Image 1 (cartoon, rainbow, N blue to C red):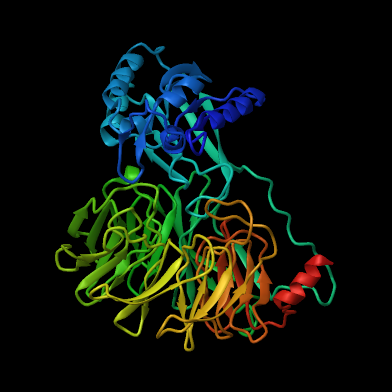
Image 2 (image 1 turned 45 degrees about the vertical axis):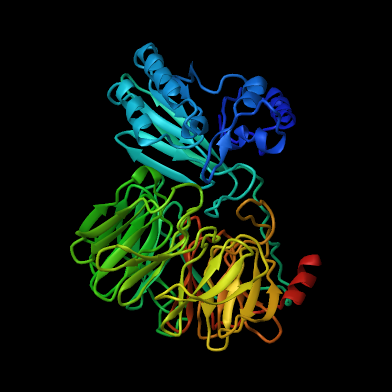
Length: 598
């Protein structure tokens, strides 16, 4: 099943290529259209076009799809379920939303008794349409809604209904998810149907670096590893009193937090680098993407907006809150903690201020802009009176809200490219921010939004924030190009390209180097963990040095622990503790290239 965007431009030539591919497929393939399949009028206009719609996603025409591919909505009994396929984008444009709702009512009234309903749509249906489907599918009749569009992995289970969004199959997702497919297994019992799902790679797994005993080959420092779950994508690690708080997800996708005590990886405390689990707690029905730690409370924020406050000593739950609009939420950033004990959390679909001690809502701002594929990647900053948020929708972009009541203080001018990273404080009153166009790094005044300087940097789509050192601003763009910039004027001192050890991927691409996480301060200087798991020391006179390799993908932000240890969490939910002071062969980029060639 392909849930839309069969083509890029929606032209007859592209549809012919789709039909050829479907005809050659070894299994039957069911399809529904996406927004790109209705863009033919943009690329091959003709006088009969009458596009409808507008806004961020533009308008739609229907004839090219219908002439080439057939009906845009349909139903069928297949594989033990009743498939209900809808054209989400034409409904979103207001062309036939009423017609499709009538079809839903009539179709579900005549479906075979007992068959569970699985909906196919390019995006998750709006609230009213989903409620209509649930009502007419009878109690517990709606089993799943399968979609795409977001270029990001998302999974929800609400009242037994699975809401599953799958990233693209041919290139990386906007959330740094790999090209993937979703495999669904249905098991029918007497009165129920169980649905299980897991993602599988859509492209061959890149080979690991060859192992060798050559003296000049890169070798890793002493490493201690400990598995804490089934998988983990995005999020961040936190440290507290010499311990590590790490998120993970289980085989069903539920989010957990684990607190780990780690003895010195170099054995200097008389130990053997052991890792002890102090506690593990389930905190959400979906993966955790934000972790905050303080002496009296640990906070976990999930992908869908579940907030859970835990006791640091025992992991016991202090309070839990569910933010509104769970269906459309993709929260990727850690909440802001203000000096007065307020939590600011949300995205363009809504911002909520809560009391961190009780979880009670102080204020809520709903729907600041249009919710769509442009995710909010970064965490904001709070001043004494403002919360400044790098909202990632088409509007309003960088947004400042009054901490007292959530009223709007200032926002980006119309047409400003959206932010793609967290805000990073610099010199007390200012912040650094990367924007999608360019990409462009800028320094701004947090109280007014006034721009101090803007500099276009080299590289592709980037979501990792800059790092401020004593001498410079350090920024590594999404494809591994490291920049050092002057903090006062934004001038670029130098650039160096990191290549990693294995092929990687990134948003809208399936090759190259991936750099989804921010460099980390360590006693040896800044270090960065690339997507492929290779670890590099930056700012060295002879260029970046390879200091380690865990040979597994990393998308969760690493942290430094004490003077000796870099803590890295790989996507298979394994915590790796690297002794960064251990003796190690550290080739430069030039030396590594020579080794890889040989």
